[in-house]
Length: 248
Ligand code: APR
Image: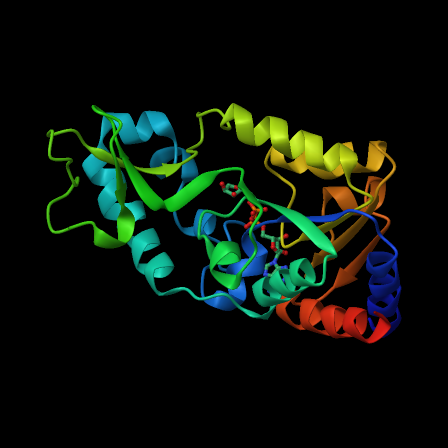
């Protein structure tokens, strides 16, 4: 792993525009389980029954009780780990410009990154289904389920559920930065969900170097990634960032 970390550090230092695409794996060391693979949320509950917009509209109380309340507990207490902090340091060093994240936990912003595209929205906010009013999740009273807005409308987390579209401005900007970058770090994603998983393909086709950081190989590893550094994101990103600082 050492020589791959040195190689990635050299690639990053010589990169003109490095960006990152992150997935649930980067937040596992913050106590937030992934969706797929060992301990994954979708191993316990069926996403089509609890994380699809049709399921929510049909029975919001059930989705709130069996999915959203648990997510709120996990996210309210989560803090950035070494991987998030390393990406914030790489922005400070002028290396990483933008993060495209599939995560809704807001940990990249808390860690200090200032240009984060939240491809699947953000759990920190709720939106009223009737008046479209936003409300901060952390302040939400969940003793009454489903929680309601002062207008009486039901609150829904401001995240993209299955069956919903990616906010067009996030999709467009992600495609733009993916096609303009010279390096894309792909950290902690199974690359199973589209169109997020297309971003590394767009970057590769535009001539960028794609470097995966993951516990396991993914669909990207053979065809799209230049190389994969296998291991935990926290440890790899911490060592990678100190190697970059040594080279600068
Ligand atoms: N370090 C690095 N990688 C890790 C770690 C870790 N500590 N722990 C897990 N991983 C990797 C797993 O090997 C897996 O490839 O992170 C990936 C997590 O994959 P998913 O759980 O599928 O998460 P993600 O790719 O973000 O899912 C995409 O699917 O359900 C939807 O909206 C949800 O945004 C999510 C999307």
